[in-house]
Length: 294
Image (cartoon, rainbow, N blue to C red; front, side, top):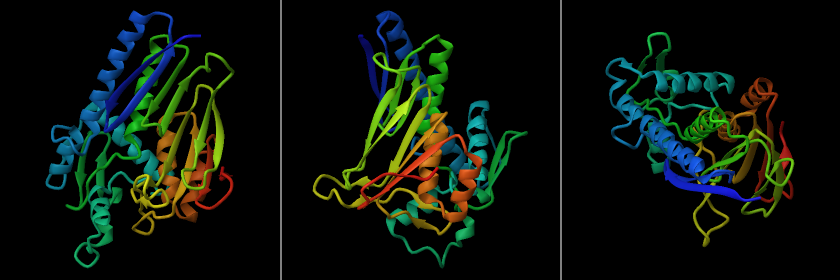
């Protein structure tokens, strides 16, 4: 069976879409619309693009309340939801804290830890206004944005009547519609780059996300570049583990794959209790298997 493949660059990484090759003109039109969806979400959520709505909030919300568009209000509602349901393991308010930790800055004496994070965000969902209680708070939608965008794409394709699709963003967040054209599911093999251990995950209309330390390069395959912050202990996660989450939605999968890496034991218990419909696997460097956590 032939398939239609589309690829583009968005949110700093590669996006891939596979559709059934029924009608090339229709698939081209769908791909064009998908590109516009991705661009719109990036322009809304990026903390690096000056014109992005999130960037405007980061510049102004510490001074006065900022009105938020309907679309971004839904994003902030979701951030609030996942902050609560992970007991703070997912925290979208750590932009400046993360930057300082990555740069190795010694800031603990000058800036109290409590001045960072979502607890310093005043989000008024009814008025659709946001304000920061601390000038050190900033919103960073890493560990969220790709999952959100993938869900937007999947919702669009479903509304257009698509019955089979494979959506991959950065090869770390994946969502599916229907089944593989040659089988009963979409089989995915997840490989730990250091331990050389693999796990097979089967998707059928659901999603998957993978989180782990990024390699510095082929010359240093055993060394990871820290990119996930644990709000519970105010440290960058350094353990070279790989977390795989299978969930009904790509957004939940992406959020939890990051949150589980950052969580302490109490937060893990909260996550496991609040998300009983997900499957979570972990492989730590040196271990011969992926262990199922939930």
